Structures are given as C-alpha cells and as structure tokens.
Length: 343
Image (cartoon, rainbow, N blue to C red; front, side, top):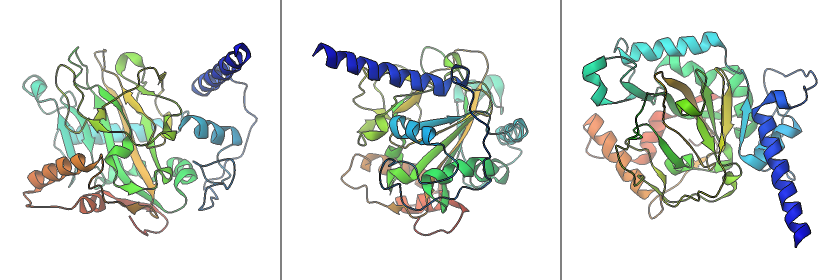
C-alpha cells in the first residue's frame, strides 16, 4: 500500500510538472525548430487508438495532443498579433459608444456605473453574439486560429458562439466572477469532442484581474447540473455554475500574456475570478464546432431550464411570441471553413 501511495504521488507530481511546463515555457527545454504549414491536413475521424480528443494532423505535436488528452486544454503562446488585438479593441470601443450597432449583438452592462461613466467601456462588461460585426468576426477567421481549431473539429468549421469580455474592476460583491462551469451546458449540439473554444487574452490576464482557472482532466466527466450560484451579491444573467462543485479538485490559474490563446474542451470545468485591479481584463473568444455535429432535444435534461430562459430573453429582445432553440443557434452560427452540413 505504501508503494502504491508513492506511485500515485509520483504520477501526481509528474502531472503537475507537465502542467507547469505547459504554462511556463521558460521551465521547459527549448523545442527544436519546426516548420508549421498554414493549413492542417486533418482526418475526419479521431485517431483509432491513442487520442480521443484530437484528430490526426500535422500541426499538433504528439506531446501537445497528449497534454490535451490528459488535461482538456492547450495553451498556445503569442498566437494573435498585437495589430489584430488593437483592431478588436477599437471596434469594441465603437460598440460601447454606439458608433456602430451590429444586428443581433447582445451588450451586457453594469447599469450602476452608467451615471458615472456614460456610454463607455467602463460600463460594458460583455459583447456577445458579434457574428454580424465583420471587424470582430475577423477573429473567428484568422488563419492562425483556424489552423489549431481544425485539429479538434475537422475541416468543416462553424463559429457557434462569440464573445468579447471586458472584465470590469469589481468589489467583494463578486459581480463579474463567473462560477465554475462547463460550456457544454449552454450548447444543444453534439458530439462534445468536436467542439472547442478558442480564448485569446487581449491584455495580460493574471489572478489579480480575474484570469481563467481550470480543473485539468475534468473534460473526461459527464455534463453536470448547472444553475445560478447561491452567493451574496449580484449574479449576471446566464452566468450559470455547477450546482455541486467538488472543491477538492485542484485548480490551475492560466496566466496569459496579450495574444496568448487557450483552446479547451466544452466539458472542461473552468471559471474566472473577480478583477481586483483598477483596469480592465479583456478577452475575445469563439466556440467552434464541426458542421457535422447535430442538434439534440434538451427536453427532460439538465439543459431544459436554460432553453426556457434563453427563449424568454430572445422573445423579449425581438418582441416575438415564440422561438425554437435550434433557430436561435442557426442565427448565431456562421460557416468559417469548409462545408455547412448539419449545424
């Protein structure tokens, strides 16, 4: 028994060392120079043996595929250029000032700050569903992003859900804390293994300003029940969290520099802390899926209450009497590469 405990301890230590090396390239040996093609050559089916969550390709190394297989996320440093990030930042500012009004976009604000700051980025904490804003949607079509996305989805790629988050300075009320959750809770399409999120830091993200934190390996678990957290203070609309969080599972904080991008599985349990600084913490993201994925009926599942909440929001926004969940997602979704098949 003592030796078994030692072996488990050794494996845990090795796993932690692997994660730390992934997050801090300075700890790892310098990789040999490689030539990365501009477009991945990817098979449609997962590897028949070792890898279940990535597709056979010539972009990801064996080590990168194994890391994602074990942990459910992969961090790529310095992927998006400063020039592109500055363009996204300027467009976000224009939206905040109402200089542009993209159709379908959902703008979430902290109304308590409006009297002090007016129409500015100091009030808006999220721009969601920007698929009709051609400037922000450029993010979803960047070759450097799609090159990696294709490794998870295959060649037929849909942009399904888009967000630019502007985490505002917060207080102990935890207004902009996003509780631990699984993104698949929000999605009525499957299979989960052909869905991936690309999340890019638009400035340095760290623990003080509310960086992402993840529970490595939880992408191997089932979808869990979600709901609004039972804590004091305000909770944001649709900021659902796990109803029964296992706090014994260790969390890893993803400290990221501007342009760093993390790709993660929709079942990976993750969240973000509050912003305790006086500045903002911006990120831009898109959930991509293979167009060969299919819609599911969420009736009588843990996602049914979310369907009703989302339908009510859309009916109110567009003064509609009824709307189907599939129709909402058909409006959000845009083809970015290949052929549109199911979604």
